[in-house]
Image 1 (cartoon, rainbow, N blue to C red):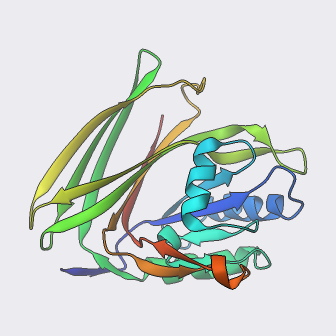
Image 2 (image 1 turned 180 degrees about the vertical axis):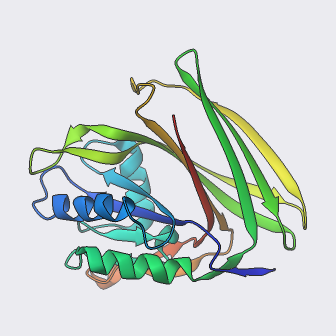
Length: 228
């Protein structure tokens, strides 16, 4: 498949608990970096003790400790003791420079009768592509409060995970409606979509015991998001 270097948007997933004393600093660092990013990225906070969707994603990543930062689907993992702004900026830049499959996406999302209509177009500039599509429904100013009494930003409310196929030099469009059973309010929502190749790599959680250290990481080839 065609390799595309340095032209994708990075995805960050931060594992967190509302009782974790170290988690607020990690989330604050991401929020600060997002205001002036070294490279384009989107981030999602997985609040494990509040969100069932976050628990599902956390189990896929085999996250035992918080705050752990999973970069581009777990291609890189930044462990809980390295939560400084410079640590995160460095790994964002490294991830942005990865060689990835040459995929472009266009995402449209709009409120409709309290739900969200989503239209995603995937353009494949390489060979036949079997991939994994993940859709994240995010609450920008979260209802959940961290250990320092501040509301989270970009917390995960809901999550979808499906396989996709796009022919070589082809394009496909996916339409779906997300049913809002969470009371998510207009103006406080974000839809983020990532696409990864179906072939995983072995991800590593450094602090985990040996029997729970490894997981299947699906490195992100492209990521896109819209606020609404």
